[in-house]
Length: 67
Image (tube, rainbow, N blue to C red):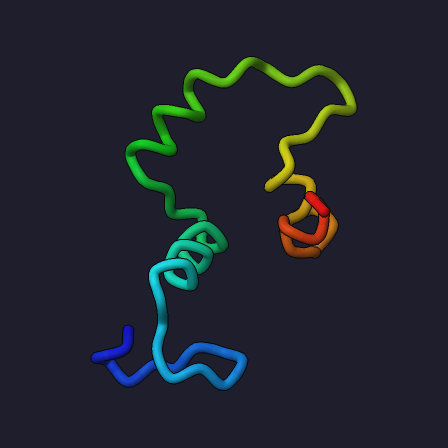
């Protein structure tokens, strides 16, 4: 993204690995490792949420919800 001329938010000069990972997660792209981890997760009961899913539903960053 840096070589294509895109610039990250918050007045940074370049995209870093963390920013790219968050962008891919926000777009719904996941790694093979994460796909394998998701397949092995236990099912959730009624009213239970995964942290990332709940943060997305609430429209807040996952780290805010975690804190």
